[in-house]
Amino acid sequence: MTRDQSPIPITIITGFLGSGKTTLILNLLPQLRAANPSYRLALLKNEFGDLAVDSQLASSSAIAGVSELLNGCICCNLVGQLSVALAELQSTVRPDRIVIETSGSAFPATLALEVNRLARETGGQYVLDGVVSVIDVENWKGYEDTSYTARIQARYTDLIVFNKWEGAGERRFDEVLDRVGDLEVDTAWVKSGKGWVDMSVVFGIDGGLASGLTEEDGHVHDDKCGHDDKHKHDHQTEVEVLSIELKSGNREATVDAEKLLTFLRKTSKEEVYRIKAVLAVSAKAARDVLKNSDEDTKVPVPPTSADSEGQTTRYILNWAFGRWTFTPVAAEVKEHESSSEAILRMTMILARYESTKWKKRLEAGGLLELEEENGKGELSITKVN
Image (cartoon, rainbow, N blue to C red; front, side, top):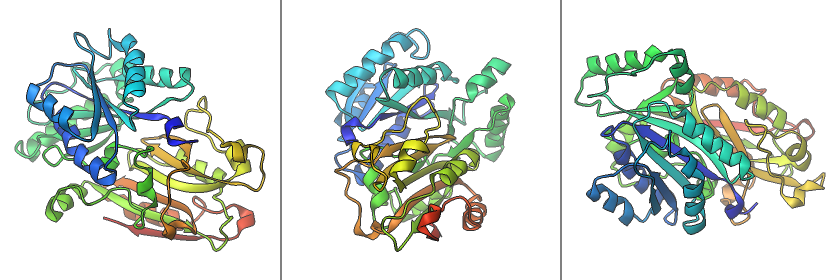
């Protein structure tokens, strides 16, 4: 599958007016540029914004196009226009990713369901990568609706970003955490650093970022993001990162797909935010074993592997908050020579204090292994931060 044929990931960023959604996006752009100077991000929004902010977005080299749906809530009466807006962005901008920025809805379940429906109806042209809710700690008063229906809808929020907490004090932050707990739904959360969150937490892997997994350090985030070392260190304390490699002296070796799927299904989305990997599987496993979390969306099998038993296929794995997809590595993505023996190269982004436990769990074996006929692989796990 070529990069142009890969599904376009869609990230939904929601939160009330003034919560800091646009600031979050603006702070993600330098990180995208550092990872790939030609990265194409399209923004779909449904509110009248400040002209100065809109001009910043429009002039940014990382924003390939901005589209607006006005005079209504995109989660309600404008949801029917979503397919038209996405198709227009796809044809005119050809983006690596689309960000939908929407205000006023604490529970974007309708929007998430619509994106999933469009993904199925278009034959996998889109994939929902994540739903991020931005909360202004200083001013947020809690959920207006804490009913059973609200709790069900809240499950569609994958990550909460707490913004503007620095001046509010720890007592106020604890109050907000209590209000989030009113819905009795466990949702991953991070604090921003004045609106800055590592893009590896917010975004999964797509065609424009895939090469990041093949760099020598095996770590998606490029530290040349315009922040000084102290600033980056402060942000990184919110998450922990494991860099993982499974190697073999046999270059034809492949990952045990059954065990990998077991690992993906059992991983806690409260402990692990994202898993990003490049891996090699056998043609037989690609056809018969690999499954996306949404089993209605089939894993693409390249033509060269469809009828071959000995062919090895390399896939990009993108796991986000309990959902995952496998996409064949595009032909034009060149891997670093250091990964020539890496059967699997993976980055795990975890909540604070979780990396040591997961490192031990992986080292105990049974989760990331080679297919039996390939012998024993060499698994190395390094805590990046």
